[in-house]
Image 1 (cartoon, rainbow, N blue to C red):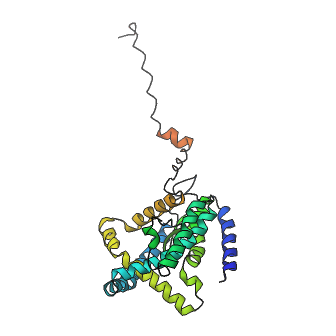
Image 2: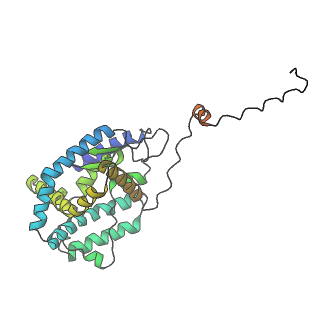
Length: 269
């Protein structure tokens, strides 16, 4: 898909999202539901877990044993350098010129002096990552997160982040600059396996502490994404809507009965 067509598709989907007001930020807004598709999401989550246990995790484990840590870190730096370039674009779209300029300096420094991003020279100079993506940009523009959704292979997302996903996958990856399909596939596989290898320890910890792994990942994802949209300073979520008057009346304690009138002294025995 060409970039112009991709942007057109995203624009059309954004209009659809803008008109959908039934679900807003996680836990926010009248009638909002955090996970309305939970039954389906859990099935996809189980599929992803099976795929990870049978394919991705064994491959990543073997990869981590063969490839030394410094080489894996260089691969991380290479992909992070491309993500920094896309981060600069999103900082501009969000009206944040200073972080955008820092991202540009990071990319330029690491590309020129870090062997096309294999070395993170910019961090040595105090220039940190910002990691802005198009999903965060949509959030800054006022688009609510929407319902939580789990995609096969891709994992946790939301309606808003799903609409941003094509742009984030296309423009934040070095494979977008390569025309050869085999090289594109190879770079994508390398990125997935290298990322999974770096998460092997975290996965074991998560398996040990999470009673319900699905709910833990869902809540952590939505909280993290909300924090990223607001740069760590998210406003308080709105209070849930008031209960209907009838329900409130039912829940209210019954009034104390009036005291019985005293018996008349002249009453017959």
